[in-house]
Image (tube, rainbow, N blue to C red; front, side, top):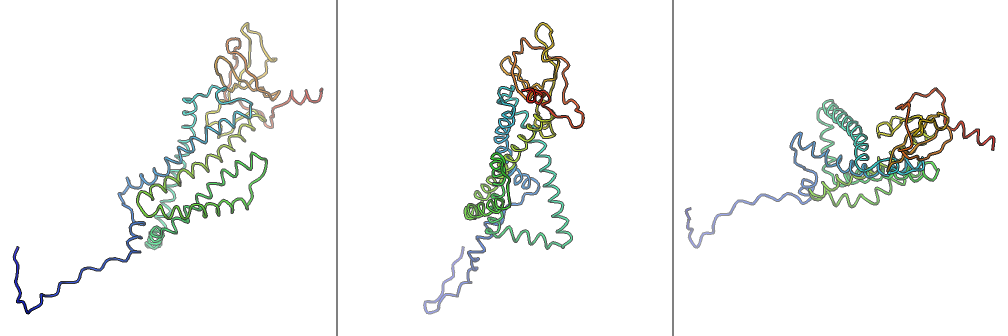
Amino acid sequence: MTYQSYPLDQPPPAQPPAPAAPPAEAVTATAEGEEDSGGVLDVLEKIGSVVVPAGVTLYALLYMGFKEMYSVFGITPEQAGMDQSVLFGRLLGTLLPLMLVSASFIGLLIGVGWLLDLITRGWAGRVFQAVRKRPWIVAVIAAIWAGMSYLGFFYYVYTASGEHLGGGEVVFAIVLGFLAYVVPFRLLRRKAIGRAGMKVLIGAFTGVGLGYLLIIQMVFGAVQVQETGQANTLLDSLGFQDQWARLQDSSGKTLYDGRWMMLLGEFEGGYAFYDCDKLMTFRKFSESTILVDIQLDPDREKGFTCGTLAEKDKKTG
């Protein structure tokens, strides 16, 4: 390193000006809106950060759905032989189709976005990136989505009380989400860890909304089985046991006039049956009960309904 001396009466030469610092707003926008792009792995990471919490919350709420579904028949899931391993297997049978549908929907959405960007010669992509770099806009969209997730809960509460969900409740859910979450989501956008946390929250809200919607559909499906003796597609995907049999005692004597009984499950040495003709649920010891002519998902004639003997008992009574 060399040094150059200057005469005392001569001032040193002026130094080149330092580069101007970027505006604070530009730094904030870059920090909040810019994220690493690692290709396919980055996309999978972003999708997983939303899908995983949605699946966890959906798993928890579907257990509530099974309790509500079997309560239609007057029993608990445990009395139908549903321990944790059986429940886990049935819930996986529900989550996997949902993941397939979600993946296809996301892929279709990405394809439409790519095509739109191609048609507009990059204008749509630039608009999308500009929106991503506006933290308040992202926070508002996320808050409205969180509010829409409340609709599943409102639908569950209103249906349980015998009322219908109206347009006022939809507006209330959107306004509630906007007022409650827009500022917290905006604050989370300041740092990378906050943005990751916001994705987890959005996934959890999505799982809660879908979970409550599925609970109601499971209850409706159970009521349909109780009335028509036939399960729908949703209950089939949940592994609901639509199995019917005629009963005999241990000596081979035919029970209940040879009528078909729906086997709900087995627990602690006892079967749980549903009598479609009398609209009643009962239990019998498995040691003294023989199942004959077992059928799975039997075909019903058009217009078949349960309760034929129950109606006769009402008329004679």
